[in-house]
Length: 284
Image (cartoon, one colour):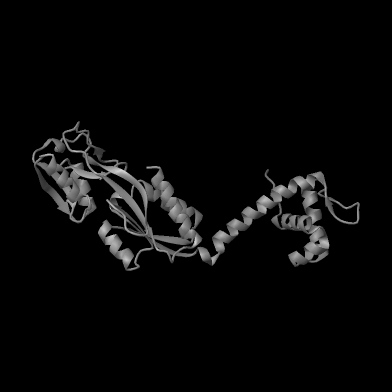
């Protein structure tokens, strides 16, 4: 049956070792000398080994005591970190994160899961919208962090990755063969204009087969093989697939995923969230 160390006794032991004696340690711990001595005795009895050499005038550690001290410091450090994270008011609050719908997957769910595990008292309000709206919200102070998909980057931004757009459609679909090519895009999709220009330059006739303000409408239409669409490489949903067109469709532009973060919101939790987002997009 597993046995547990007494953390209170372990703290007294580490304090005695660092202070060089029971008297000084008792003052640091705000305990009586007898209470500290009793805790040390209990710790030795539980381990069945002497930890302090009391033969001299002062207190020194035995070989076993020296070995335990390293463990004790690590255990206490972890204990204090856990207690601080779960109770400190500094790690409570809300962060508003804006992300374009087409780059929510696969990175953002992983980020949210990890951040919640490390900061369970912090709430992340996720807003999914198109880039131009997110930038407007950020400018008005309505978002703490936003991600964008755009060709360039404004001042104060940070490029997380730069990836090509790819054609996507229904698994095994044939819509990409149709002429005019039927496209499905949201009204405010930032990729829409560039895709149309690429088709015009390639001399491929096209028509806007499906347009909507709803991402779900676009996804459903693509899954039904009614049209094709363009997404950033690596962000396609599992119910869509990259079109293997063999050169029948033009290659599309490279786009940036940029991140903007409010300078005034620089607490440790937010800084860790930014690092998690960076790491997630490094893996794309």
